Length: 243
Image (tube, rainbow, N blue to C red; front, side):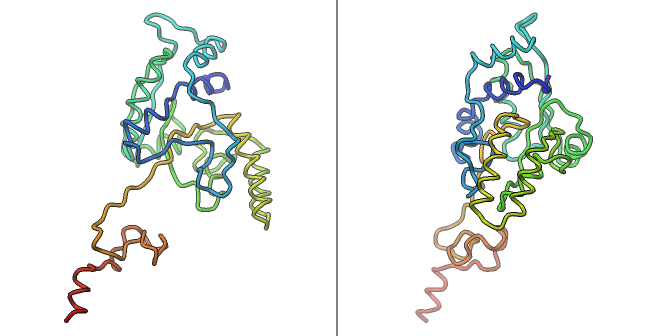
């Protein structure tokens, strides 16, 4: 069914991203605002994916020939995830949401090694929930949407998207690159080979009376978040200075 853009749009319209951001990520991860990360210099705010609209989703599925059958079920699908970053919980919410438009969901949560083999190598899945880095350079997103790339498990192929990424990669001017990446985002928002739900954030909890973490202004996130070799206690240092 995913070959039909009407079905892909219906799936996207059935996803209540605000509900997932609140219930699964407790507000720490903001909802996605487009096909690319909203904090990137290449982000195109005009490349909008379909908004939540159950009535339109149902109409599109009817139009595509997937009408409700016995028990109100249109189709049965499996959503695979790799049990990380709230993915399993997100799938549980998606199961509730998709049921409203007549799609019955089975959740398949498997460890990362098995997920990689099944989804990223064999493409053996109905729908899959996964994430991954889209930056820091916008060209990294090519891994997900350019023909034959390693994270393009959808098998998506659009020669115009490939061309735009190649041109942006070769351009020396940031404004030119932004324009080209912006065009690619607009095509992806229409083709919908994938659909973003949230821009997940990494909580970094630490004591306020200690310094030297990767988020401190002295390091500007240029050291690994797990590198604690720079950490020190302000209280202990103050004691040493008084001596």
